[in-house]
Image 1 (cartoon, rainbow, N blue to C red):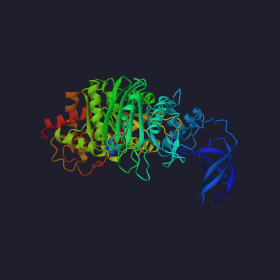
Image 2: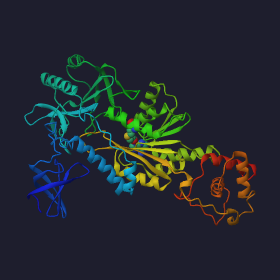
Image 3: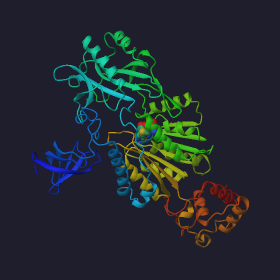
Amino acid sequence: MKKNDVVRLKIDDIGVNGEGIGKVDGYTLFVKDTVIGDFIEAKIMKAKKSYGYARLMQILEASPDRVEAKCPVARQCGGCQIQQMSYEKQLAFKERKVRGNLERIGGFAPELLQEVMEPICGMEEPFHYRNKAQFPVGKDKEGNVIAGFYAGRTHQIISNIDCALGVPKNQEIMQLILDFMKEFHIEPYDEETHTGLVRHVLIRYGFRTEEIMVCMVLNGESIPQREVLVERLVKIPGMTSITCNINREKTNVIMGNEIRLWWGQEYITDYIGDVKYQISPLSFYQVNPMQTETLYGLALEYAGLGMDEAVVWDIYCGIGTISLFLAKQAGQVYGVEIVPQAIEDAKRNAKLNGIENAEFYVGKAEEVLPKYYEEYAKTHGGETAHADVMVVDPPRKGCEEAVLWTMVNMQPERIVYVSCDSATLARDLKFLCEHGYELKKVRPVDQFPNTVHVETVVLLSRKTPDDTIEVDLNLDELDATSAETKATYEEIKKYVKEKYQLKVSNLYISQIKRKCGIEVGINYNLPKSENPKVPQCPPEKERAIRDALEHFQMVS
Ligand code: SAH
């Protein structure tokens, strides 16, 4: 098989990026824009030893799962990858992708997944769901001003102001802006020469409030005839915020740092559930508000709160969407996020909603969380920090191991993992399940219909010590340094039983002794790291054992 060969093949699989996969004489070909079941003619573009990439030339026989793409430029545009697949099949593909990764990377048994996986939450109407659009503005070959989307993996603009994923209002707004630019000869920005004025137009729409924001991203401070533009835009019902963003850098980054208000206010307001958010041009905000409500509703359900005193952590909290969702049913919520601006938004949104039990930390989760854990022990006489529920919603690369370790150490009863990449999700779940947790529920949510992306919400619960084999050694015999020990394990057990009506094992006593710096004997070397098979002493019992150690004057 070599470059430019034209071949015929049947597509019988789909890759992680939505591309069709088929074989010709045992040689695997990846063909974009095809659907399982298509019989096609394709031209080989790149040939490697055992596989290659081909370009779809002709569909000889269309798959029954193929539908006509709603958008005329679906094939060229880099935004949607699987618009030509029926929505039902898209959902099935995403479900399979999550299950496949959990099996292969996570090592979870198919029978277990059968039991814990709930059907994917799809959308009733898988189009026009995005509340945010960023249209690059440029020129076509004839020199006409156009706006649209970048072609896949390039910066060539495909003219299209009627994106099927965005709200229909975008078209009206963009047409108005393009007409205005033509009328007053305003130049779009040119990436090559770093000249021209209008780079992008950002539009945001509040689905609940119907408020609209327009932000003109400029390679300059303002625009000629600005009043005319504003006067025209404010006639559009719902217009709430008109601003410009100054970006004079030679960069791929869309937005600059400076916002100037042209009309109205700098932000629009919208809701997720009954939590209200103020969204400014630079704020991060989930782009599919309906499915976000579903996603975070599930996270809330899985968190199983309702306990007024629950201590909840929301790691990778962004603007605090999940934190604020959970705060109403928790005692205290702690959020951790790396972007300072997002934390400012989180704090402001907490205030806006009258939420006082949410606290936010700025920094890398892999640094903030372990540090919090260490500091807590130092300032609480060796007592370990505990959480009732921990939620994580990491970026695609998943959680750093330091985050996972600290979570395990904090022994939450439940962990809710919200993921946008099921491969790293599977890797992290494997770790957590090797360290005392078990998989209870998995539910994919289709946040981004017509693209290959899929979100997943997972519930893990802490295995009770009874689920593991309890190693109850006679530690009194093993303790080589028993001279130091002032009370025997039996005495400690008796004390705890009488005062607290709690049964504690030798293992738990030795764990707490060790935490307090009391030697537990060379023959009983507990592993430094938490061993998955060794149950960890719960906080309630830890407090009782510490009291006993104090009582017997073994710690001061
Ligand atoms: N639940 C959030 C979105 C989470 S997206 C919301 O609805 O707003 C993942 C978040 O993790 C992003 O906000 C990103 O800025 C943040 N992030 C990325 N790396 C991080 C790290 N090492 N430590 C903490 N936060 C990080």
